[in-house]
Length: 286
Ligand code: AMP
Ligand code: MN
Ligand code: MN
Ligand code: MN
Image (cartoon, rainbow, N blue to C red; front, side, top):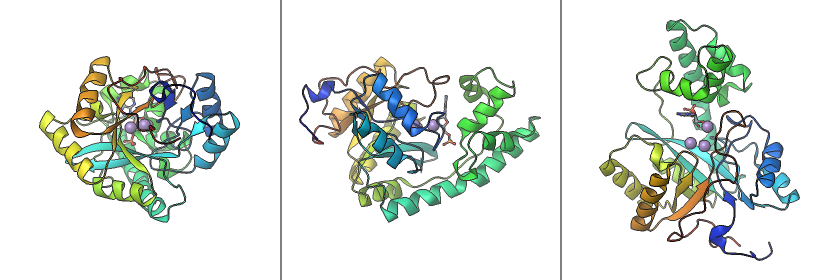
């Protein structure tokens, strides 16, 4: 790649989003075009537990003159909470990573049937089939697809209302799930030569102490970065996680977590720049 023509911190990097290969509604090619239209210069597609969109995303990004980092967002269970760990610059041909992700995905079909059963018990019929209709592959069914079904069938006004009233702890359609361990996810990312990033840390229901324990364990396992500027963080959370990144010596990442034009209020490439006290995760990529 040629040299960067301005401050790397100001590079418009969007290192987190989803395509139809997981729970987004746009194909990798259409997402790449949208990223380009919104000024993204360095892009990563990070589908949940799945690498099937990487070759298409990379080809589309390079054809449009964007830099591309291969990516994935791995579902992890830690101390009873679900965490998401993004792997960037992974070799998507890694057999270890592929086998690990396949194991994670294989739990989704069973869980999706259980969610369907729970919703049926709450008086909502046909949810499993409805959710499956939005993705086609039982191993890729996520709560987002159930959310789309619940909106489509008139049960909820929008996806936000779904996650307030259904599919979450204590509400109809909640099914507990055990995903990968933190050690497994980091091992797979490292085997694939990638960099591990804690996705949207502000979204986890962890006490301050538990967050510190998690970040300490992540660092001990070789984790290198956290998302500071992400679609679900408030400006206060940018500051809070910037301070934690400095405390732990983590690099910082930036990503919209864009899923769909109708559902995501944060557009690709539109978030503020990283705070200038931080080192971007992409600082030595070019
Ligand atoms: P799953 O991996 O099947 O548990 O589904 C998790 C997905 O649901 C996330 O990747 C988000 O896309 C979506 N999601 C979870 N919580 C919310 C929320 N509060 N609002 C909108 N989408 C959410
Ligand atoms: Mn998602
Ligand atoms: Mn996530
Ligand atoms: Mn995501």
